[in-house]
Image: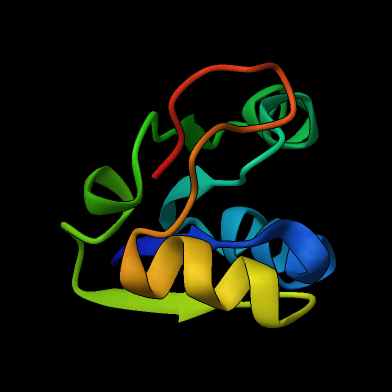
Length: 85
């Protein structure tokens, strides 16, 4: 199954999906958090929309700002100063 994972507060869940053989695409506002999962086989999505192309999408967002960012496109930049969302 192709699964998108947005917000890596759920890293353990994403790791279990990878171990079970699912193809996982991950998006996080802070890209370096996604890189640890890429080392385990996940694809890093550069934008929220890229993580939403699979059969299922899971969100694990930490606060209202994160929800506003990914759900409503209200991110101006990520922590690296790059356009986010």
